[in-house]
Image 1: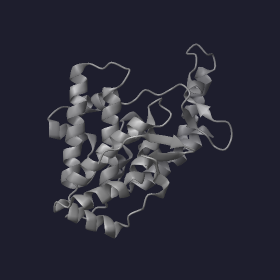
Image 2 (image 1 turned 120 degrees about the horizontal axis):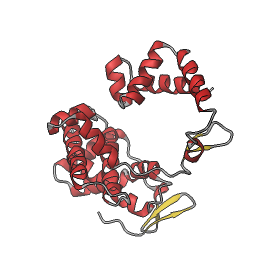
Image 3 (image 1 turned 90 degrees about the vertical axis):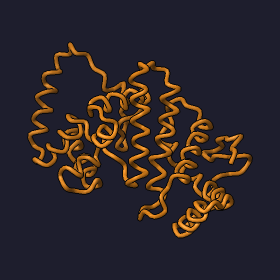
Length: 261
């Protein structure tokens, strides 16, 4: 499938003159049927799967807007990730296709952004990051679940810290004008968080922060420590303390809201 002439008009993506908002949405049972047929070598089923999941690609690339990247290019790269997902998906696993495809699409886009980044990273670190992304895809293909950083490090036989540094090095830089918080009022941007280290009020802020943290529950403190001191993902935290990722997300947001208040 070759995609050309992708354009944005009034928040709608047009591919070859076709408004993608009018593309059909596949039901889960239809996806399962088409995946089985595609695995059997039916190219028409494969094409139908690609067309029926273009909206999924569109939803993913929304995460990468505002970075100055060409949306046409991101869409093309996302489609490559979608095609890889279709070709590598294991139909015998009891997992929804979108659960497997979304991380694959994101990984493909991140690889593209890494290779076209304006920030120069050493070749050795870039190679480690590339190997880590390959290991991640391999582990996902085997388990149908997103692997942890520790699992990726074990697969590569290198320290966890090296994997973290490598993956962090290929993350796209954040703009000073990226919004980081908005609660119906004025939006707070990254620029607003930059302060002067010589500000006489800094020590007062530190005292206020420590007092705010003291009021958190032990579980909230533990979650924030794992997330921001140890750099663990919400999924890793959920596994460690025995609750769902959704609960971790809710508790983390609640704790941060308390501190901000």
